[in-house]
Length: 312
Image 1: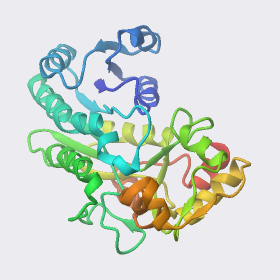
Image 2 (image 1 turned 180 degrees about the horizontal axis):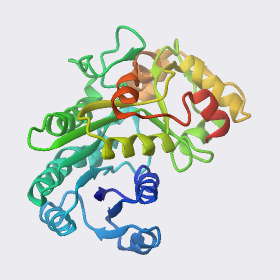
Image 3 (image 1 turned 180 degrees about the vertical axis):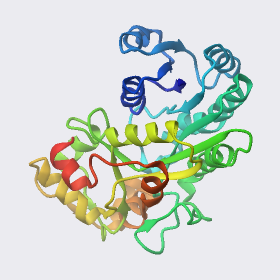
């Protein structure tokens, strides 16, 4: 198949493009930087320089490519998430999830593409109540934390217009927290360095449940979504949702670092805000049963336990 990959030089795109090429697909990949054109070409990707927020430019690029599938992996998070000012740190990504998604969908329809696969996110958009692992059938939070409302609305927009599309096969992939080479939780990533220097403490009860996914498994799941026929929303996470009080000390041990410090929630709130405290003490994880069943997906790292030890 011929695949238009928007965001070919991003965290996911750098793994996804070679995985698609290895399986015999032709990949047209976008970048906003002309400096990255040659590296894309050298990897076997047909490069296109375009800004996802430029509707006319996106329309021209997709129409010229004549793809079978359009894949949306555009994000704009440059320096990591600021939990206290959550929406501010995700402002560019939110534009790409709203205007950018609309631009790519319009171009996909105009070019005759039959399938559209988009990146979404799981865990924190769920209600902070109930069991540790939510399914795709569970509703999202009707009352998101104030600092995250714009980011929440952007995620809802992606899922409504993509998974709800009636004129093409739409798939929204709710990724869990990335780890592995090239991510913020890689060998030399931002989060990893915070754990090594004991700057990522255990907040309050540490009962917030996180769902992780190795970046290689992100790519393999996305390939399954591109090549398959299933539509709708899928959780792309590993088999073991885990509370912070379990995974954070384990990660520190895997890195050979000292155990994390402990900070009361009321103190942490001054530094990381209500959203940050919720991430550490209240959020829920996700189940991957539907993705494994309907996409035929198999994980290389079924648990973050193995992944933290060997896959960073």
